[in-house]
Length: 172
Image (cartoon, rainbow, N blue to C red; front, side):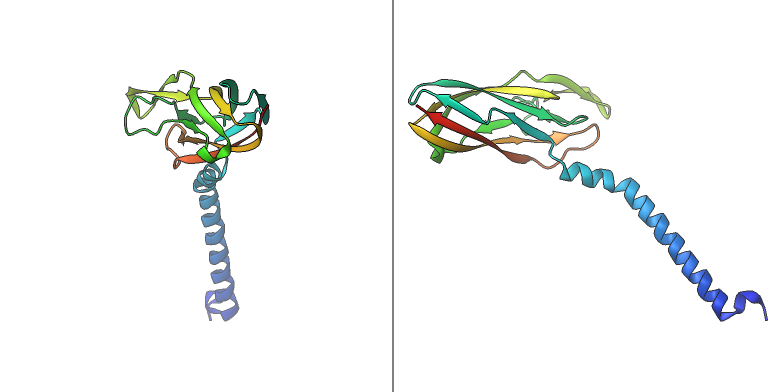
């Protein structure tokens, strides 16, 4: 009888082929989907500071908000060049005891994607600041402000995201 026909050998060959296939599939999966999954799970924009501000109650007060965009990503500026692009927007809920009078955003940087060198985008990268002017009622207000943005890399954009920007505003 041929040695390849023995039942023990056949089982060994089947197990070996299955194991080899599973290793190859898992390696391929780790090369193709892990970077995408890690990009989706990571925080593209981080709020840095201030955590607390004291302002005169009832008076227009400036607050500088500092943010950092993860390396190799960009977000659209507050004034993207195309209507279909999602702008970066800072907001404060009406019920917080603090009103956002206005926000001044930085000028975006020109950015060109390799896939479309004729189109220039207006984006933020690295660190950026938003100059907010707020009016607070008297008291201590834990404000859960929001920053809405859409982060992209060289080849894809992530879904739009809104992060909480916690600021303890003390109106004196």
